[in-house]
Image 1 (spheres, rainbow, N blue to C red):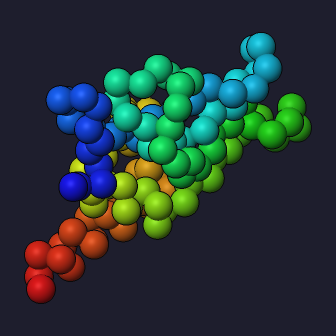
Image 2: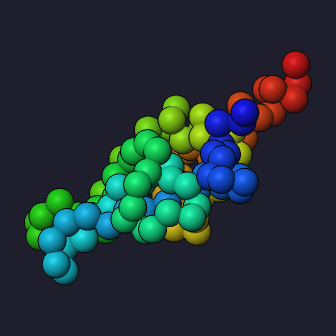
Length: 110
């Protein structure tokens, strides 16, 4: 069975890379997770692959802060996981999409 799909009853459920909201009221932080597409936004997930803090760490450093484990992301992308729009932008900034394209090109070249 392909790792990007799980069986629930008679249905095959795809995996998405998406954000899960954490943090306090009006101070959001997010986890970037691999989750089954039919699960709730903050429901069960398969693996945490990164974090995203859109408000920065403190008022002194208001810039967006994120950390992505590119190896885990490339693994999930190779197994068919689809990123959401916002997560795709974060993956582009972190270089994970470039690493995925390079791995895909190397696999085709063999």
